[in-house]
Amino acid sequence: MKKVSLLLSFVLATSAAYAQQSIPKYLMLVREGAEVSNTTSYPSLTVIEPDGSFKTEEFRLFGWTVPKKTVNASITQAAAIDSSSLTQRRARYTRNLVYQAEIKKINELSSNGWVLINTLQEGTTVKYMFRKEFPVKDAAMVK
Image 1 (cartoon, rainbow, N blue to C red):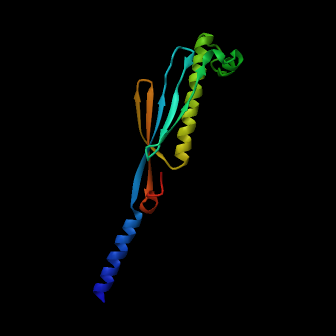
Image 2: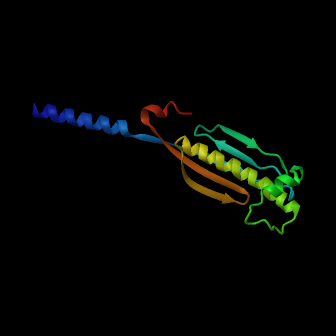
Image 3: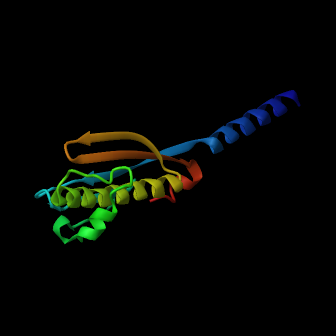
């Protein structure tokens, strides 16, 4: 009887440990910035899924199309006196649009359970590595 209960407890402990195992999956977010001139850029955000599929969102930003009122309205109250030219402010405004989309995507991934584990910058390219733990039984169902 003692051997049977010992064997049973070993089997239960092993199955409980196996049930708690998880498989990490990795996802990468890449922001590439292709600046043609001070006022024109073609940046993109690419999400590379754990299965290797990817989705790219491209931005066509032309600083000269942003109205002067919009650019001037984006200056904070504390920095009301801005010595930069209108061209520089338009370029900064369009770059900020990309940064906002990038932060929105990072927040979206984080809210879905992905954890940021690494950031790498190479020139105008920034790579974010995310990890998410999936239970063994659910790992096959994930992309």
